[in-house]
Image (cartoon, rainbow, N blue to C red):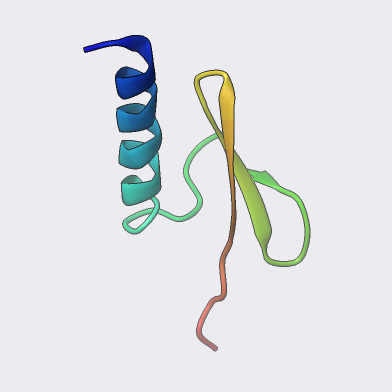
Length: 52
């Protein structure tokens, strides 16, 4: 497995894990609904809309 394939797999796994725990340890809140997680040297930015 080359570097790009490994990196994409890690990012994909991190995004999939967000379905179970959208606020994992180390998450940074950016805005009212925006969050950021680190995946190696990369960042995943996403929004959470809680049901009220």
